[in-house]
Structures are given as C-alpha cells and as structure tokens.
Image (cartoon, rainbow, N blue to C red; front, side, top):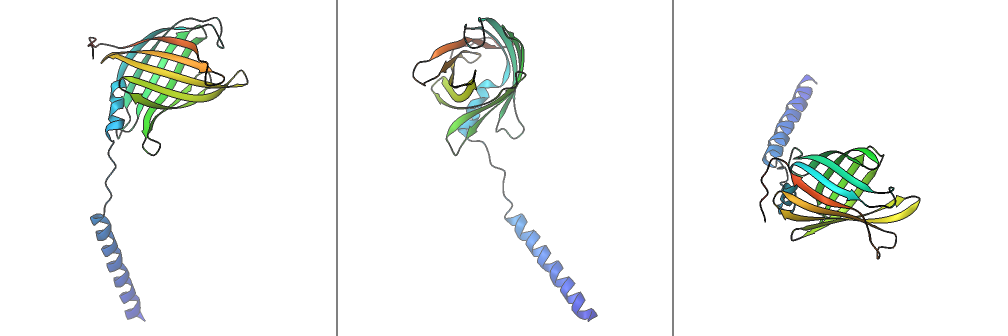
Amino acid sequence: MKHLKLTILVTAGLLASAAAAQAQEKKMEMPKPGPEVKKLDYFVGNWTSEGEMKPGPWGAGGKMTGSDKCSWMEGGWFVVCHSEGSSPMGKMNGLGVMGYDAAKKNYTWNGFNNMGENEHADGNVAGKTWTYTNESMMGGKPMKGRYTITETSATSYDFKMEGSEDGKTWNTLMEGKVTKKGAAEKKM
C-alpha cells in the first residue's frame, strides 16, 4: 500500500511538472495597443481650456475655464484625464477615460464628475476631427449629445458641444479652445 501511495505521488508530481512546462511554452503574451489606440497620444499632456457656455439647459450661460492633466494608464490602452475648472454653474471636477473599442471599431469616453454625472460616449476620427456622440436625460427628457474636437495644431484644439432632442436639429451648448501647457504652438 505504501508503494502505491508513493507511485501515485510521484506520478502526480511528474504530471504537474509536465503541465507547468507546457504552460510556460504556451505562455500568452500581453496584447499590444494598435495604431488606433496610439492616436490617443495626441491628448496626453497638461491642457488649459477657455470657452463659453451658451444660455440653455444649464442656465444663463457665460465664460468657463478649465485644466486637464491627461496621461497613459499603465499598459498603454487608455488615457486618463483629471479635470478641474469653473463655469457659470460653479466649480467643476471630473475624471475621464479615453480608449478604443476594437470590437465596435470606435473610440470611447467614460467620464464622471462632481455633478453626479456618469457619461459614456462613442466616437470616431476623420482626419483631424474627433466626433463623440451619446444619449442622456436632461430635465427629464432624452437628449442626444455631440462633442466635436478639431485639432488646430499639435498643441491646441477647438471644441463644440451640441445637444438635440430629435437628432436632427442641433443647438450649441458650449464651445471653446484648449491649449497644451508649456509647449510652443506648432501648426499641423
């Protein structure tokens, strides 16, 4: 009986060693970001923004300013932005994550802010224009949103945020300019 137990233990040990060796031979490599993900590198850095909130669902409108600190998340798949600023609505703070969904072949934005908003938008890029769209509730009504970024140089872009109840008639909610801090502006 002792001999049988020893044989079983030795056999189990050999099988475990063989399985471990085979697993090392077939070790999966971490996936690497593709060229679509690398396009997000444009947004990495420290940015300042100036703009105007139009009169509408958020009140009378007025000037707005902000700053964003955007960096790559470990692994190089997502750009994480920490934002703060002020608007006619008061002080604003937020966290945003930009990425690329290879299955859907579109860019993604997921943002959270001190107004309790949890936003998700899907986007695409054509040349130097990035367009993100989403759907949300505003004042108890469904609202379609469109956020357009137009790269004007390697260190600046213009933005416009629009809203629509029907997806056909769009109203500008805010627009402005964003500039990378500490970098001389170079025309693209």
